[in-house]
Length: 383
Ligand SMILES: [Zn+2]
Image 1 (spheres, protein in one colour):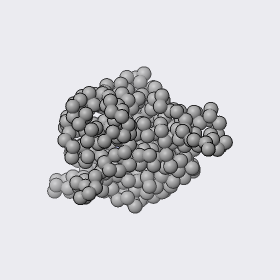
Image 2: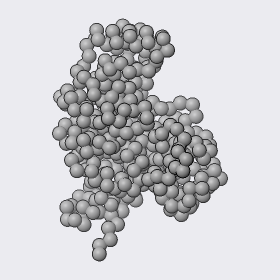
Image 3: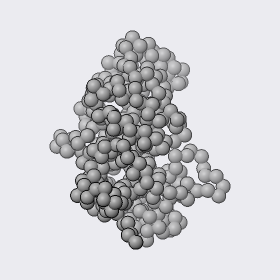
Image 4: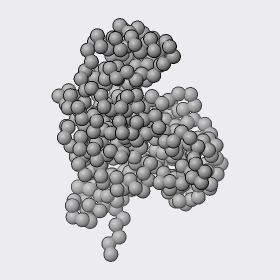
């Protein structure tokens, strides 16, 4: 009986192509648990968000980084975590993740969170910013007028990219849904929509949800030529899951193909097969494993296989989508190495690929695709 153990990828450094930052202070046990779920309510009686695939992965991969055996009970883990203190825990977990670069979406940053430079320092990795379109637009609108909005937004976006940001992020799925008209709005349409939005903002309705303006932001992002990351698939309860199906972006993929700007579909689950199809049929569409790789725990092995059913290997990217806890960077990285190693080992055993091909694919997903797409080495030289 063959025992499948998979390819050993434990040595491989990774580029984390989409993450956020971590809380900068101590957490009590219930706050810790709430960082381990997409829910916003406390768990039901008899349930815990850590009695889950994510909880198992946390005990498996993070306990050894804090000097405990793999799978140590949660109460032991949380006790050791408290004894070590925030700074030590951060250092142990991020260095164990072995990341060479982090792309940080700063749209969720703020008080009580580490800044991008401090996060990179703790990880011993290059950390670069990803600009969130809707947050930037809200900043611009707060300072401007309806007629000036479009030009001011373009300037602000270009300034952010000149300042070192390597990519752009869209949360269209949260603010409207991915089912948008694919066409670039006209200048009069944008000005009229900005006027409505600014009036609403003055009435206390600040969030940008207007589909004309959301489309305008996306087209501005496409114009820059930098990769555009789009939230798709699951997330917290603010997102409409069915309107987050990446297949809804097909008209936008078709409309932007000639521009050639890369569209990176983040998360994707449970529509990852739809996303893989888009990555196959549109040369500028990529898929990213973030959030899925952490939340699915050991089941990620099966799902990464499904991502790689249709998507060309050169268009699949790793990220953790870690937010809040340093554990989530390590879980993402460890689960990617393990799950991808298992999948590739199985394909080698089956005769589908040789081990040289298997290692090549591992390098592609682990960092080579991200280095090429986001031009990270060039950025490092500028910095
Ligand atoms: Zn995210």
